Length: 126
Length: 108
Image 1 (cartoon, rainbow over the protein chains, first blue to last red):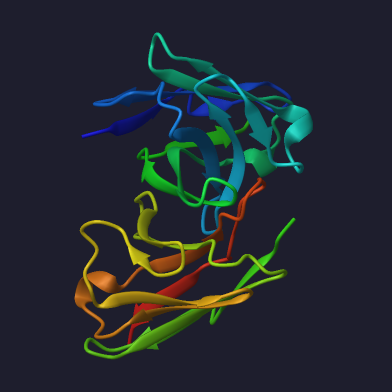
Image 2 (image 1 turned 180 degrees about the horizontal axis):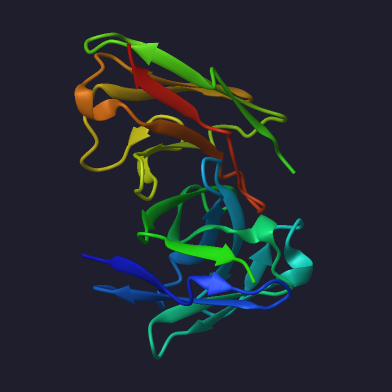
């Protein structure tokens, strides 16, 4: 079955850029049925959607993070990646990658996260 | 952005109890509401999408209802493995997609 796995450094210094990669196994990353997303969760807190990318490379970002976020796709490696610049302690969180699926009509779909990676803990500290 | 508000933030219940969690959207989202279960140290797991459709493998004691701005998740008979935190998420059309703050279901 399809699995997602995050990878990247667990410790980032303040002001540096976080780079995380999500590897997709057991299925296609190139299907136009899906988007691929990053979501994060600070310890003891709720979930925050960061952004999404399609197989063609079309992106959409959370306005609250848009100035610092870049999500990219490498279909040949079956990976998509997150870069988050100017990291601060407030960015310390578990970062999840997830597959996004749409249901409903072609005009107005309901988008949901049907598969998740296990998560990667990222700590911002000097 | 569409804001999602869950209530209660936490609840205590016993095995066998019927449990209801409410999620309210700041504007109408039609039926574009999804529910997730998260256990400590684990990633969220999709339970219900499009308000009331159970994800494959999810027990039938879970159900969802609502439309517009008000939605509910019901667990008809709480089981030991259901003690967890539950999140609603609106998937209405274009992003940003947003989550409720979570409801923690604890053992009474």
